[in-house]
Length: 312
Image (cartoon, rainbow, N blue to C red):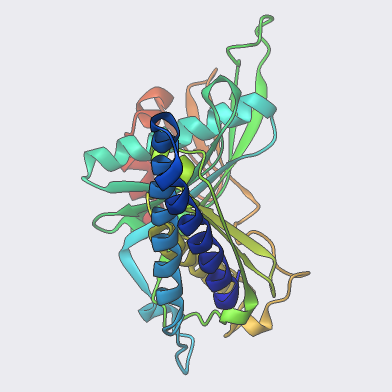
C-alpha cells in the first residue's frame, strides 16, 4: 500500500468514524457501549495510518557513493532469525531450543532481545522467529552462527527410541546503516493487518502488524510484536535492509538493482555448520572440525567456549 493508498484508507476510516459518532446520539445504552468501543478502535487505527503517511513523506533511505561493508554495520546490534528445517515437529522443537540457547547466553552477557515476529508450531516448537539483539559485540560474536544446525536425538514423541535427524536454519544479520542500502518506495508493497500475537485486545482490534514485500527481489518481511503500526514498520524496514545487505555481500554486488528475484535466495548460508549429537553428548562444528561435550550446558547458554574457539 503506497502513500495514496494509505490516505484513501484514512479517509474511509474517518467517514466510518463520523457515522459511528452520529449513531452514538441515537443509540440505547447497550449499543452505546459497543459503538464507543468501535470509535476508540477507529481513532487508534487512523492515528497509526497517519503516522505511517508522515514517516513516508520523508526520505526512505539515501545511498552512499560506495558500498563499504567495514563502515556500514553496528557490531553491538544484530538481527537473529531462526527457522525450523527438515524434521516436522522435532525440527520446530529444535528451533525453539536454539532460540532459548541464544537467549540464555544473552542473559549471561547482558544482551537485550526484542522479538519482531514469531510463528509457533505444535508441541511448543517454533516455525520461525525474528528478534533484534542489542549488546556489546553481539554481531561480532554471533555472525558465525549463520547456517544449518543439525540435531540427532530421540524425540519425546518417539516410542520406539529411534534417533531422528532434524535441522534448523540460523541467520545472524547486521543492523545496516540506512545510507548503505537504498530501498526505493515504488519497489515496496505494504500491507497492514491485525496482529494475532501478544498485546491483548488493542493489538487485535487495530491493524498494527506490517508486511513488506520488496518487489525486485521478492523478499517478504513481517513484523507484528510492537503495539504501534509505525514501530512495526520501522522494524520491518530494518530487517529488510539487513537481509538485502547480506545478499549483496554474498552476491558481491554494490546495489540492490543488481539483484533480481530469480537469483535471490534467503540470504542464509545453506551448508551444515554444526551437529548436536545427544546420544553421544557431543557438539561438532564442521567448519573447524572440533567437538565439544556437555550438550545440556551449551543448550542452557554456555556458549563461551564454542564462540571463543570460532573467533580464534
